[in-house]
Image 1 (cartoon, rainbow, N blue to C red):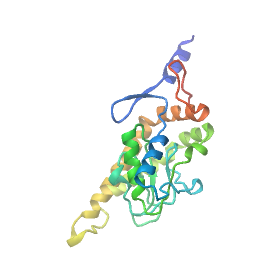
Image 2 (cartoon, rainbow, N blue to C red):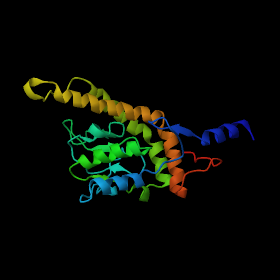
Image 3 (tube, rainbow, N blue to C red):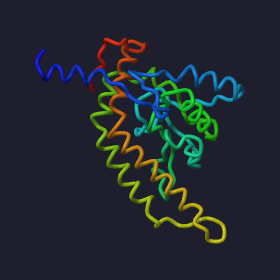
Image 4 (cartoon, rainbow, N blue to C red):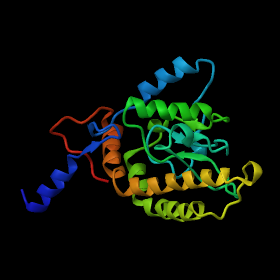
Length: 221
């Protein structure tokens, strides 16, 4: 095997630490956990009613996505490591999207809790039915556009230039903007470190609907 082939093969067998410290290889399917949580906690409510056609282009590939959500910006209260906000409605208002995927039951529970608080039921969980290896690669190759947007909005919302809409002139809402900017910076960091191996595992999952075996290489993007 040539040296460059050996390097490429080594990089194809990636192990990724999740936020709980466990080492993942490939892709962990969060949908069984999410379905169990929704059935148990909210049996009378169709929590994931968002439609693929309305999805936010900033959602990273995966089963969950924000579509026509409300503009209350509550998602980060429960899932700050997974949800961020856009500014598409103007005036500091926008909808929610998923910037990091859950990789274990605890993270899935946080995401489902956040989705359950969203008023319009604007999240979807049928992304696996729509993403393909080709469209995942297209999203990844176009990531620079999303990254530049996140850097720009983080600089804007991280500054003290937005009105303090709290009671008695307090800076209540400035802290909201600062937290939202933290989410944008976290999104940028995730694009730079962690998202690529996740997407490689997700492409494998889309192709075979199972986790990779020890000796199987993950696809390249």
